[in-house]
Image (cartoon, rainbow over all chains, first blue to last red; front, side, top):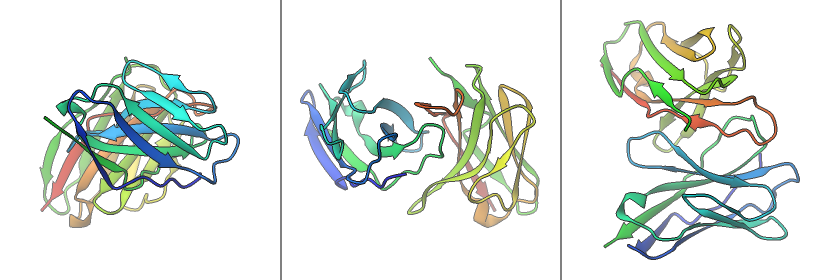
Amino acid sequence: DAKTTQPPSMDCAEGRAANLPCNHSTISGNEYVYWYRQIHSQGPQYIIHGLKNNETNEMASLIITEDRKSSTLILPHATLRDTAVYYCIVIVGGNKLVFGAGTILRVKS
Amino acid sequence: DVKVTQSSRYLVKRTGEKVFLECVQDMDHENMFWYRQDPGLGLRLIYFSYDVKMKEKGDIPEGYSVSREKKERFSLILESASTNQTSMYLCASSLNGQGTDTQYFGPGTRLTVL
């Protein structure tokens, strides 16, 4: 599975959009981009995934560049409860998950 | 919504004890996984199962065994707990391991071995 690069931390004001970037320049054609988050001492929570097209669900939007070498997770109206570590993973479905260091998102009031 | 539950959130055991960690999913998923998560080491796969009574070793199976007698239940067994098995244990399940197959996690069990 391709490697990803994420900034170690980001801050966001409550109520604002949080935009979390991820680079995956070695992604191959059959690999999906997945996002999970993990709130302290809890299990990882699935957020969203995509292959080529932009995706949106009730939690977030995923924007994937046309060349698929990078993506952005958007939380449209961040709340304090969105403070967590966010993991971007590139994976072929069914393979084991490998979490990198992720991005620590701190939402501040 | 997918629901994956784990038998305990926190567990304290003594060295040498036999430890059972249980995981149950309610979505009729074929695949189930056991990971451990340690600071600086990320997520590591211990065992996984793609069907009842089937199991496959992950990256770090030593000191662990698993059991899957029913589709919805996947148990992790520490035959003789040691202090280096102190960790956060995470169970996950996924539908069938094909294509876009999302893994859903339980809340985790934080195990301390004294």
